[in-house]
Image (cartoon, rainbow, N blue to C red; front, side, top):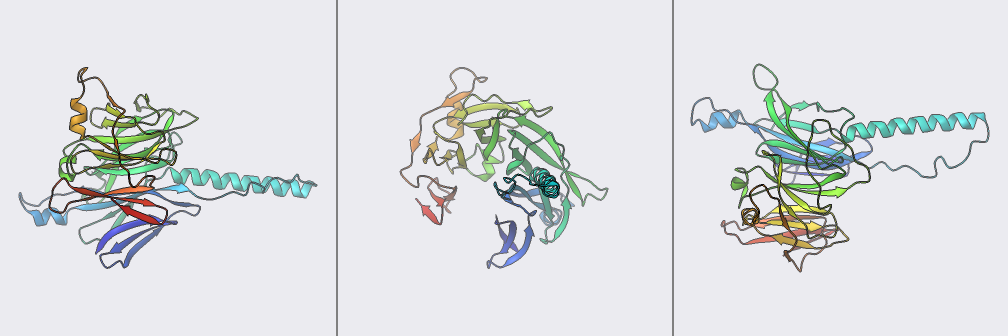
Length: 340
């Protein structure tokens, strides 16, 4: 059955444990996958303690968003038409190009979701319910305790629950249950934090979010506004309370990677103009440093810098299989992966 998923070059591929392709989904022409998320929709047992019944009723989802990759020739419309026929052809070409760009913008707002049952069979496809114009292009996806979290280019963070969409309960749809916004920014990266392992993280609703400043500021209707005090900072927010708990501000460029560490700490990697990987104290320790009261936001500007791996495209934490707090870090840059 499916073992891992890869995304890139205009397609998403599901692989078996033997590295054989099981299924492939192509993205819309002119786009490529930007982010994916995998999670569990729900589990229902026929009897209390019936684990087998719970497994049989569990659904899994794969969510994906895309970025626009279509390139436009800057010299395509440079020449001035010399006659009426050329003017009409130019107008037709301009109208067609505008139509293509508008369609790509709509597609970039999609979050496409595929659902699977316990037999790993594709069951259904959910059409996104939020294709209105009052939203930016989706930039990042994350599964948080079975909820789908979507970040976009307008600084919006939407959290979705899964609800039955048929009387039998076999079909599901997603329902928005929370909406936050960092105005004047886009969402660069998100990660669930707050625990020493996945199980402990699931007991929390803390998100570490990095943002990137944008020239234009958009307002999302009905969104709870989160104040941007540090344009390059990483914001630790409580998704349940819709509040900012802490700001980690030490990078000189937008943070492109955030990872939770086995000891509850946070790992962050800045962009090319920063080129550093930094290790932060466990979230519980950071929040305990609040000397001004529980309503104050903790701001941290000093932390340790790792000598390696430096500038990276992505990071993964490799925990100790014996369950200790010892871990390694794998950093990817161009065609090289460094493990430190």
